[in-house]
Image (cartoon, rainbow, N blue to C red; front, side):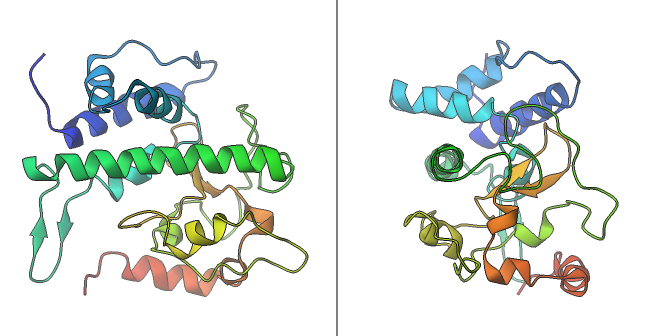
Length: 221
C-alpha cells in the first residue's frame, strides 16, 4: 500500500466508519482496514495506537466534525492552508492524538463523576437511544465549532478541575471544536455529552443565536 497523507487516511477511515456505524446491529469491533492500520502506524508508541484505536471505534467519537475542523483546508480572505501539506503531518497527528485522549478522558469522567444515563439528552451507554428531534435544534453541531466558552457550571454543579481547561479552550492546541460534542453512531447528528449540566453560556444559547451562527459559519475574518 502506498504512503498516504494523514489527512487522506483519516478522511477515508472516517467515511467508511461513519457509514458502517450508521447501519443497525453493526459489530462494535473495528474491521481490518489498511487505511486504519496506516493511520495507527503514525503513533510512536503502542500505547498511543491502542488509545487511538479505542477512540476511533467509539460510536460517539466525532469523526465527521474532525473532518470539518482539524482535517479541513482553511480558506481566509488572504490565506489558504492546505491540510495535505507534508510538513503538517506531525502536527495533525499530534492534534488527533490529543483529541482522542481528551475524548476518552471525558468518557471516563462522565462514568466516574456523574450519571451517564441522565447528564445528557440520551444515555451514552453504546446503545441506540432516540435523540430529541423535532425541536429548533437540529443537532448540526455548528454552534459547538468554537474555541471555548466561559467554563461556568450551572448552580449546584461542580466540574472536574480539568474540565475548565477543556471548556475554555486551553487544554487542546488550536481548539476548533468543543471536546464535549459527541456524534451519534456515524450519522450527521451531534449532541452535547453534558447537555443537562453544560455551562451557563451554552444554556443561554437560543434559537436566534443559532440562526446567527449558521449565517456566519462560512465567513472568515
